[in-house]
Length: 122
Image (cartoon, rainbow, N blue to C red; front, side, top):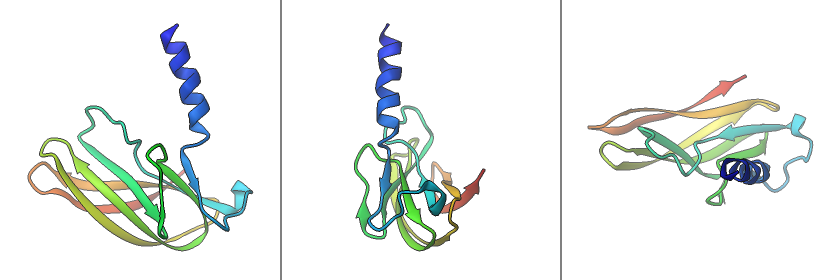
């Protein structure tokens, strides 16, 4: 019973997890999606949080952004759990319309996140 209620809540909230920037088309075919990790990731060794896109801050519950294709500035936080190291990274990227991108990190417990990149996914 509890798991069903949790699934219903997650399903309801899943429609709200993406930032939809001003001026972005309401038609998903004309948007690019950039996804980071959810803010609650118990036990994950590395977490990558999308903080803002073009000066538009994401809310706590948002882990992705839908934006027009073209040039964008992403601000990303990367957390390495083993060493509790948090670093901030700026990425200047060019996004293709109707594409989906995922943030990725190279990290070690000693150095934290050494590099954050954006990878196109299917």
